[in-house]
Image (tube, rainbow, N blue to C red; front, side, top):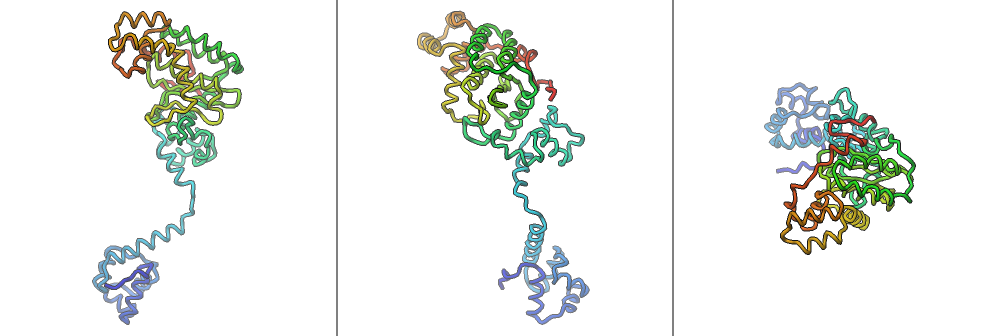
Length: 372
């Protein structure tokens, strides 16, 4: 079979086959049942080869119909590439809009749209949400596109949650931040661990010390528990998702993020607390984890209790330890479960926290839309 790789269009191949046979365009038209004008347009590639016409050409020249159609397809694609203006940002824009939870963001009141099926309106709403001129510009905000504890790009869903926290935090009124007084804040928080309802006092205390504490319900798939970042060098923000409605988790995450603030972490890029099973633990995370654990119950005391009582933990001993530690049993239970990896222990002492915290806090989600 003859090689026709040198031909770039079906017209070039048809013209070659005519010349090879010494045929005129009129003769080919008669064979195909087409007029001379149609044949002329085919040769000049002003008329495309359809599947039906490719079969007629196959019968006429003994060249496969697939070859004519392949040339036609390649030619059409080449014309399209020439006609379409290259846009390096198109791929990143499509990735962003494709991976953002647009429907959830609309339902949560984050995107304001008249027509939810209008892509231009969606892109404009996304641009407004992220505070940029065009949707594709979101990608260049590298300061918000890193999770410093893992040194990896964060997901668009995580980026959206972060921006919502930031937009709410910018409108909050709190007292001036003074980092030298934060140890006193820790002292005032410690007595609140005695009962779940005491957590309602936390948001006001954070505002008194100049820290913007925001609670934003997690987006599906975000897996974010908390974040620490700064609007400027004197404006720290803590965002929490309350993914786990449990007293021990609330206080651990809150104290964890507070330690990041106390150490000045997250000033260059947000410091996320993401439970995705892949995040690496760096020095900053280790320090925050240790501070949070010791705040809940001194690690040395928990380790001692486990060493003395494991593997059989008696309810009486457990409650006595919580009483001596001066915290609610749920706090102690969380520490023991984490250290022993026995997550079935003391679940009867779990306490929900969300309903105690949210009424006194700046909140977005759980049926509430923050006025941004």
